[in-house]
Image 1 (cartoon, rainbow, N blue to C red):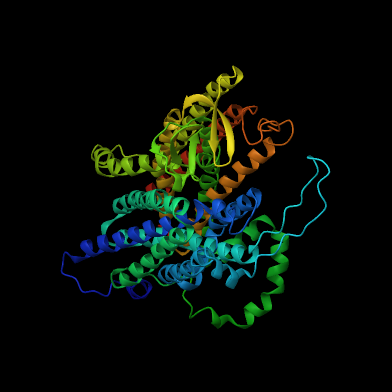
Image 2 (cartoon, rainbow, N blue to C red):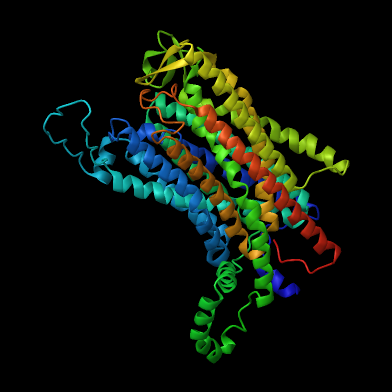
Length: 576
């Protein structure tokens, strides 16, 4: 029906020549990619040194309190993703949801530079409470109560608002950018867009790690967090400026509520029967209220529910991959701190507080730069894949499906954690032979094996390759297979499940850190030389291998079912 379709989508306002659509679609997609890069630069600029910021003399939070705040912020930025997607689908539309999220992002991120100087902290947090004097501790083993963190309500509120804004942008900007490509350029253009979206994310990460994190650690946090606010402000301006060339779609009404009702009806029929009979009178007395409102029919609700039932197992079996992926931000870094860090940069007195340095050395490297290996891999391989590998495979009709790429990415993730386990076994052999090098990191001294940290490069390379084959096709799969009225929510669920993988990995570390666990090292005082982290890596590899086989089986059933529907010429689902 052409008339309703015309109301659903708003074409760009700018008039174009006959060859204009392709040019404007690319311009619109480029604007989305630039906004994504700036937003990611701001996000990593906030999170990279958040623990160091809260642990500094400005707030005097202890390490555990600062780490907990950072974990809450990172976890919320993933777990809240379905909320922003649902709001866009049901009420706001993607364009308005992104604009409002950027505005909230700008307001919430301004709190960090505002609290980076004394007058701002006094305005938002009040005066620093004086530490009360208590009786002396009679023994070194007596427990010490941690003081209440200064400015905690204000900072936690700002960080949660920032996480909500970041999660909403993560859910909606991805599918909004794909909408610009699908309209005129087809599905292969959508695949290329997801490649370059991930490339833009890593460009933002490089900008943040090389520039923002360095300024925060070596100059001051006011300037560093001021740059993050500037990135968000520039992203907001670019998004509004490019509005006339965007293809925008009004909210079509999310079918999440309908799907939840169908799930309740199938799982708990007695409860559903009681609920339906209780509301039957109100539904029957006003039959005309639903007729003028465009919406999905019960048959469409059931079809979309069946699609969701098929998509969710595929996405859930990807969770163990995320457990492996987030190791590069936790245990991989911890392992690197116990390897010999080579001398790279000359030491200057002005930046001596930031270094990872060997004792007695005159050289050091900033801590946040250890994550750049993964980022550089993605920045190099995405253009190679987009311009060389994918076109070649497409011409030869050998281009694998998104699910096949995801299975390949899980294999590379498995290989990465196996390599990390092998390196850890080699490191522990040096430790057991008492061949160590003392290495000072901040105020802590670690006893590292005389193995160069560059031995970690293979595991970072493998995890970077796995991103290209698992995460990017995962985004493509979630967007293309979701019913149109649930695209925002499905994208949010995809990001939410990646956060679940991170939390499961952290929970596994906490479980194995209990007395008797592989990671319980009470005599090390922060070192891991008496731990068996190699066994932890091999356990992760086993979990990844088992779920990869399950994923291959589920993906095979999904693709066979999809091919069967095509061969039977079934009516296509309503997708964007």
